[in-house]
Image (tube, rainbow, N blue to C red; front, top):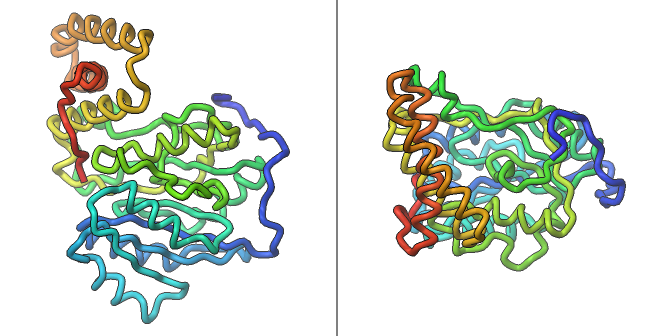
Length: 317
């Protein structure tokens, strides 16, 4: 990855030539109706600057179709096309695949999670960056929006913050990609099953998809001015949640990467180092202790999975 530099992608990507592009905003949801309602209100006011037209596609990953009444109440007065479909099997990869199949008439697909919301200029900035860099996809930051004041050790340790980069940075590592804030060319998803259902209960289907796209020579770029904001409820501000998430992240990484000797050695060495450091960090500050313990669990989840003892099998909602 060209970290910290404004880089231009090779000029070989083919983009739509119509005066106005069409963008399908895809939202997969699971029993978070109040958050979905907030997102739908925000998406009503998206600026286009005359550059594109957009539609909204809601995929309900709940056999009980609990999101349908929310979508239905918006449909009558929604300013753009708002569609609903249900994927009854609880599998986030299958839900994403249904979103892809329902948006096949668009030039671009944008993904945003049901517990997130964007600024009005979100897609204008994402599309401009994608086109300026002649890229296949643009990614933006996901920033936490705390529903109540978080513990100090969370903010000091930056435990719910993700990596971000200057706008124009070319991403060459899949670990910096996600479907939480992305705009991509629709042609990227030409495979019949773009997202692998084997990751459907653990998560990681998005990183796996983008890893395969990078291997095919796709160009990904970062747009730092187009963040979305993720709602963080109190139950996600706990040590238990953060450690479970780290263990599951290790599970997914092990399933994706396999048992390469360098990775195993790296994880074993990290566990030994962190085991020695943790008692000392406990007295120097909770934020340092928890940040290191999270890293410990990342590697522990990976090693346990490689020996056939995955600590967790399903993702948190």
